[in-house]
Every structure is written in C-alpha cells, then in structure tokens.
Length: 198
Image (tube, rainbow, N blue to C red; front, side):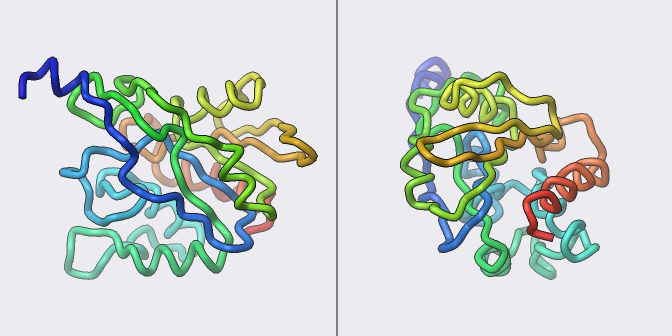
C-alpha cells in the first residue's frame, strides 16, 4: 500500500463503548492509537499513555497499580473492575477517522464521523459529567453542545434535553502533552472530587 493510500483510508473505531450500569462520568478521548501500539484490548492501551498511571496515583498512590506484574502491559480486567465500581464510562469522540500521519497525535487525525454523544448519554441516565482528554475530543464535544471550550482543567455547564451536565476539559494523558504526570494527576483528582468519585 502506498503511503498516500494509507493516509486516505478511513479507520473505524475498533472498540465498543464501555458503559457500566450507573456510570456518573463519561470520559471521551479522541481515537485509539494504531493497534501496533496497544498493550491491551481496551481504552488508553499504549504504554506511552499515562491515563492508567494517573488513575493509579490518584486512587492507590501508586502509578504502577494498573500495570501487569512482569509484563509490559496494562491489566485490562483490573481496570474494568475498578471503572465498573467507580461508575466511569469510556469511549472516544470520533467513531471513524483518517490518520494524516503514522502516529496517534490529535493534530494529524481527521474526524470522518463524530461519535453520537446523544446515543451514549441515553444509555447513561445517571451520568452527570463528561470529560474530554484531548484537543480533538474537546473540539468535537463543544461543537455538539454548541459551547465555547473551557480552559484546560476547567469545566462549563451544558444542557442536553432535560439534563444539565458538566463538561470538563482535562489535560491529555499523552506524554506529548507538556505537563508532569503528578501535575496531571492533581487536575484529574480535583475533577474526581467535584464529581464525588473520591
């Protein structure tokens, strides 16, 4: 396959939304990295992405908590159990994309089909907050709700039908985002505390 053809190919989302019963928080990234970069078959699968280290630091005071012992992989089953108990749902803001370069950077993702956020919310009647974890996800959600994007680490109120929700824009968990892991964890912890997950 020629390089031009590779970057003109539409890529469908490889995962089903993770929507545990009673979830109060919906976290939306942009789109998963290419599968060659995955360490598990779940969201934020790249070992170079720090989302599960952020969760580990906040809830267990251990950035390695969700890593499998002796393996270079995250522990999918442990993560799923934890998210189900806490009431955290996961998906991404795009259902299909074109990659304009051979990487996972938001900058080089072209959204072909945005996710039907309304359909996700219908399946999450207890959800009171949505978190975006990247610039592309923030752009898609703000367009959906017709609001200006909040500053990184901040939130705004959004209305959807008869529901009032908070939309949080959080720092990207990618290591390309220039903020130390501990500082990212502080921002996420403040958000979890506001929502009542801590």
